[in-house]
Image 1 (cartoon, one colour):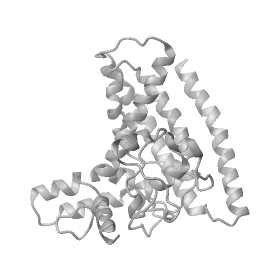
Image 2 (cartoon, helix red, strand yellow):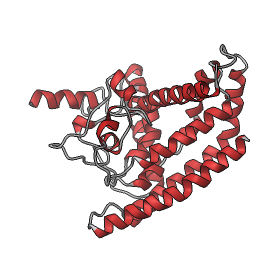
Image 3 (cartoon, rainbow, N blue to C red):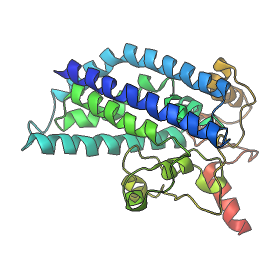
Length: 295
């Protein structure tokens, strides 16, 4: 049953992806928007395949670990099937918020996640531009779900299902969605997330629900007077596949070689991206503070 469920998810989502990507490409060409480039699209597909390969390899490990902690669960059953699945969806989306937030605020994990943000384009294929090495640790964030009585195979399924939604919000062709903006992650919210504008940095971390961002202070709406600029604050000048995946690791190694204290070296590894002991770089919080001073 579980394998059929996953297969059904793939059978349903694959034609949806093909149709909406095809429609977006057609719309882009018709309106001369240049939302796609051949190089950018190929890089996105390359990163997707790398991530998929590692995801498949790590699947068994993830299931074993989650099943192990399931044996120590503190909740044995839920009143109804509907309550079980709704609770699992909310819990998984909540834990993903913290996974995503830490990916942005700890440089060690930003070095993994930065590949998803390094594209200066923003289209549906960017949704497949995966953080290649994230499958190595993603399951750790879902261990608490095992403790509260959710089966490993169900956790993996709900993550895959919410990923479909997460991919489909990577578009510039959909405007604001009215009342849905209050509780869902919409394309508008996710455009902000991929922006390099200082006021938009490290905002809107949710996968499906934007309520976590509103509760924990990371929400930012898309502003009419502040058009989104996609990519990094310092964009890569290369489409080299290895450079795209490992450039931040190279920068970390260079920083760790600097003649400075052990505490500073730890900050270069675990502190927020942009932190520097001598102030020659700035974190998103420092950049935002500087922006507010100018206003």
